[in-house]
Length: 135
Image 1 (cartoon, rainbow, N blue to C red):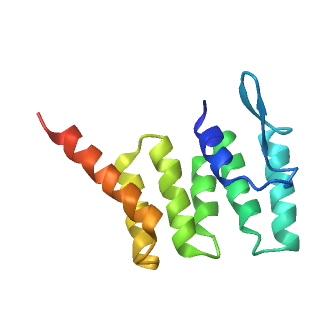
Image 2 (spheres, rainbow, N blue to C red):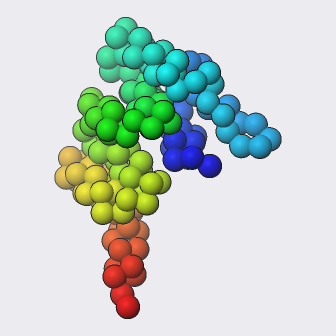
Image 3 (spheres, rainbow, N blue to C red):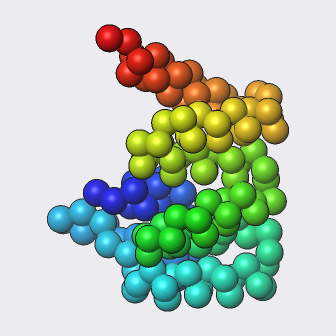
């Protein structure tokens, strides 16, 4: 299962037909292709700039197409800075980039101190990093 598949499943909004994954017996597949999904999400954001599900799915379409810098920049442009940082953290975590993930979760917590999900995952990542550094 790809990184984008894991995250898309978590972030997708039902009914956002141009930017979603479809569950099939063998796993998940992108509706259309990443380029077309990205185009549809960009169009949705032109019409409604605050449409965060389209922004999230645009980031995941970029990641699915192998464009990690654009994916991260898109999450960073979220109208909800804490949620954008959290989503960046999830992307890093799925890619096993634990230090980058922890940094993103810490930014999310700084933006929203009572962000329980970010706090819980940051705690798990810290524990994992401590275990990794033990002989």
